[in-house]
Image (cartoon, rainbow, N blue to C red; front, side, top):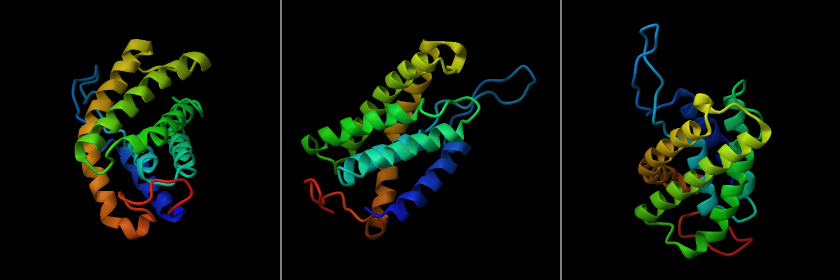
Length: 186
């Protein structure tokens, strides 16, 4: 795994996350402007899942930890540091544990892994926010969970295309989709 490439992708995905590129605008606010955009693509969690599926076992959770920290810092006044960092790191560890049991190169399995990972991320995010008394979207556990669930479904549909784009730069990544599946290699 090449960390320089990871940090470039992290910067790109953080910019896309903050810009909410691909989010579907809807609704009107009281002032007459556009309402919130939902569902949105969760670019940073997709990057964390991508590295969890294909990078070396030891590097993948660390990459997810960094993605979670950037996710929290990008939403700074609304998110406390750790509200997304911890759930994303835990999800990454789970994906690393199960990735040998799935066919990682298939579009359907990539979409399903992203869906399950982001749904678990949604549950853990709600639990973490309740534990540390961090703000919830809509000021409700259920609203926050359903917003993240919608984002997870939308992200799972888009994720295989994003993975395909990432693999156009295989020499820069430092690993391949069909690379070694054992610890300490590549």
